[in-house]
Amino acid sequence: MSKICQITGKKAQRGNNVSHANNKTKRTFDLNLFRKKFYWPEQDMWITLRLTAAGLRTINKIGLDAAIKKSAKKGYIFE
Image (cartoon, rainbow, N blue to C red; front, side):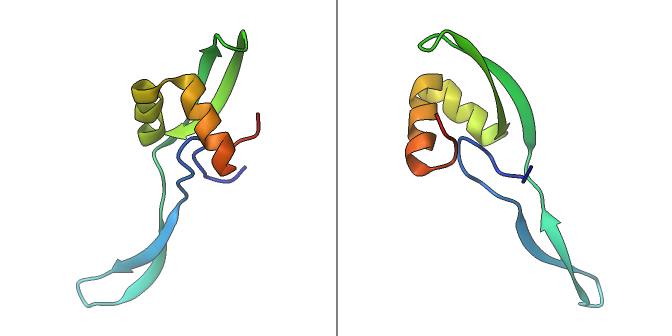
């Protein structure tokens, strides 16, 4: 499964390692991604999401139901 947050849609970015001698080699900037189980009272079920710390803060701020509906509208997850 790819490294994408199911709430915010954030992906791993690519960039360069730059040495002291200014040599550049490719690298990835990975996400702070983890699996978290939530109880969704509107649907009366448990769901598991792969999300970043920013996605968890979004859920804490606007609520699980609103966050899932918003991310489903943007196409990050399917209801």
